[in-house]
Length: 125
Image (tube, rainbow, N blue to C red; front, side):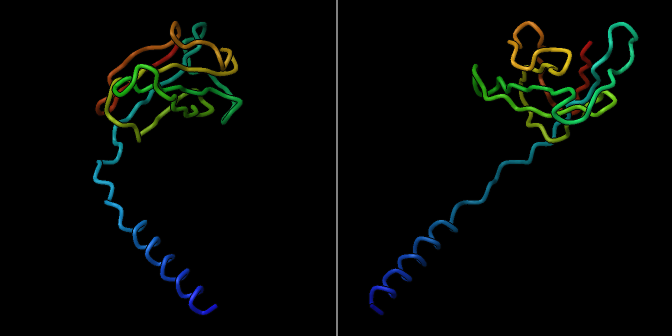
């Protein structure tokens, strides 16, 4: 019984040591910024809405790596503005979704394609 316990302990230590010896992440952290507003076309002012899942959601599709990317979502503030400072540099398809637009609609006709490098301002009307 002691020998079995000792063998299990040795194997566990070896496996744990191998899993902890992975190479460090040497990529730069995302540092690009996408900011802007969702503007009411009638008043010309930022659209007031709820925060979180009841409000405005922005969808980013990174086209730099794939023609059919997995979407990345983030939410706008209550006053209709948005500011995401942790985006990787690249080409993105960006669209605004929310209570005024069906969430699951195709974004091909309601989106813009932009290169995000540095600070980029994009407004949606």
